[in-house]
Length: 434
Ligand code: 4AD
Ligand code: MG
Image (cartoon, rainbow, N blue to C red; front, side, top):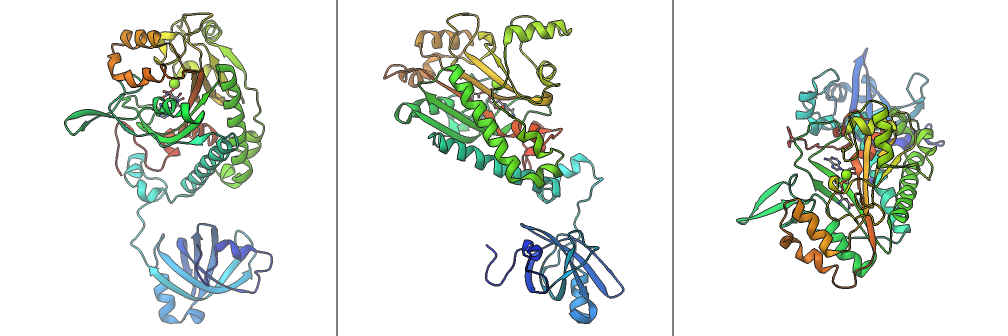
């Protein structure tokens, strides 16, 4: 809210604003003074504008006080909107009064500091132009996802993040002491969404997921935001159509609503608007053949790592579905393919331009014996999953779902080198502060 009598900075650039008086408040982006004139660039959530304050207009004391405001200090400004061809957007505010809310200490952040230092100072670094643009895009993307799911009549659910089950199998779960018993931070909401699907048919959750992966890669976080959807009466091919519709709609929405931010981050919105369904589909077995022909040491059964995923999409502007992975590579809950039992009814969606997996999708195994067999072969005690098997005992229907890594999508969309740049306070194996 701008509050009574306060104008947003963007008001300065309105067609009818010239010559009017405005009252602004915000933070100082830059400041210098010369020859009795103070030049401030003032930022609020709507934009930034140059403010000039003359000593004769502000008074000697007012001028001296305003002159001592540091970068990121907070001020309010009253002044007149004037034309100024040297100002970045052709207008400036000529101040009649500048009130200092907090002069601030010298701001400790500048551009050529080491990455480690900048990560230590993340709570301040997130005021940078790039981060502001990034998190506006992220908010817009989340909004677009919710809007899309709402249009598709998929209902938002609130599954727990603390659990006595390590849903994906165990190895990469963060274990905690839950009043003397083992507890886990959620790696996926999927099992709970499957339970919620029976009364609601179409459900989703947007929750943090945790992965205790020690791997320091530019695409892994230990905490990430996970969008998970579960649909009743759905098979893999219908699910893939749903996913591509969602990806196209949400990415287009961001391109339409945040073009300036995208440009600033080096992704022309036109590139995102060019995205269209259907996305190409490639059988895992075919992908292995292609990769082997390119010299990768892979065979049927090999997992696709970052290098392999990169090779499959580096030349492409479109995302790519890779289908029907070997059963041993994937989670216990995926439907064993009835046509080729070596594989599962699953697909990963790989981002364009080599950015790698963004979505993991599958139809869900409904046969209890097969679920037990897979858990057993992974060395997991099926007893912990009794409640999950119950879902197969009461009105079991075919269903399918997927999980999309929000930061994975943003990393591609915003061409970020490292996934940590898509989240304000990144959690990685070497860091969980600030
Ligand atoms: O492929 P994953 O592990 O699938 C699941 O967890 C399913 N239970 C989801 C479901 O079907 N409901 O993870 C899903 C997605 C990946 O495709 C990736 O985008 C993202 O989550 N992801 C990560 N993102 C950032 N850092 C990590 N360490 C990630 N691990 C997975
Ligand atoms: Mg996956």
